[in-house]
Amino acid sequence: MRDQIMSDFLKTLASDASPGGGATAALHVAQAAALVAKASPDGRAARALSMYALRLAEKEAHAAATLARARRLPLGEARELAVAEARRRACEPAAEVIAAAAAVLDLADRVPLDSLVGTDLAAVAEAARAAATTAGVSIEIHSGAAASPEVTAVGEHADRLTAAAREVVVPA
Image (cartoon, rainbow, N blue to C red):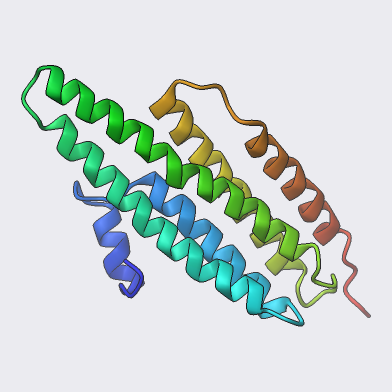
């Protein structure tokens, strides 16, 4: 996935063999971090976060494949145990995606706002929100737990960053 051409990835995403929403959530973080790296005076941390998010996308895809394999097992106790374990393990990369979404917003807060980066930072905010929301829903589905406060915090942080980006005035 990491080195796949975007058009090929989109074809895969549209297929039955799709890595799924969890992987795309991690990719939202990767693209958000890349935008922060572009705009940040020191983009090293953002570039590292972008690469970490790509690894999370691969972990998410692996978790989805593991769950799909478990669901194909013959009915019985072994299948139930395998599905339960796969669902539990699917929550791990999703939780990491939520934390990465929060981290990318923290890095974005350090970028000086001006008319050259306002749109980029709005994209960062909304990509981080999408990532956290999607990962949060994944956790809810797989664990039965209620939405985590971390998802709400990412959403509120994204609201503040988007509002700040809207305040940028283009110089005359």
